[in-house]
Length: 302
Image 1: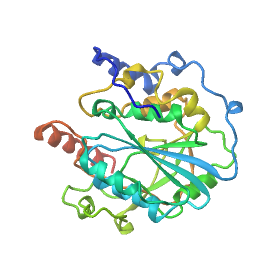
Image 2 (image 1 turned 180 degrees about the horizontal axis):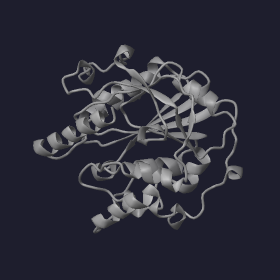
Image 3 (image 1 turned 180 degrees about the vertical axis):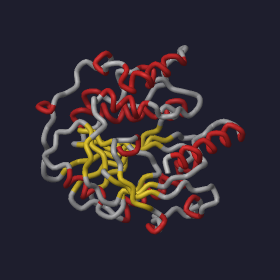
């Protein structure tokens, strides 16, 4: 991929963001912004050994990313080829050190692909996802977050479930998640020096069914990804930011694809949920308020 160039700053009307959130709720036809979506007949029904690209972002989340990358070392795919793409910033020293270590790990069937972005571009997650979508050579592209793990049989199970499919968007029908962990939870403070592959205790995770392709569970057909990108037709979501942006574009992506996704059976999907977000860039008050809101939402969801 070519090195990303930060565009000239431009004024961004907050009303644009509010409008797009309303539009993505179904109030506006997606064809206004993306008239042409590749139909099923334009998507290859690939079979055999599939190539899956996983796209992740990391900013101040090395303590989560270590588990994700480790899962590919400890549970490597046997029947699929995987490109593990990580977008990161060179100001995040712990993540840089982590990526340097894993780049030395030669795992059959796994290709490491580290992509550096300026901090402002990293903070708008749709930018990296769009770059990956447009340039990917994979059969399928899994857009995810760095707190998600691919444990025993995950990627092989996904490749098996995707044989001959032409869906624009699929998602795992279930995942295993922790509770909303406080910062002092041991799993959130792994030993990072020296860097080494680490696994989690599966007894900390509970099985949950899923009903749509949420942000960490969006698996897109490669032909669709290359044709339309990731919210490429919504310039608002391609503008860099000085602070981390809440990922409202995840919903917009499903809206543009005219689907909530189709569920597929995928084993070994694990996700670490936690209160304090390392990516928050505000002061203590801002971080405390946002963490409190996360706890409230988690309680409301049961």
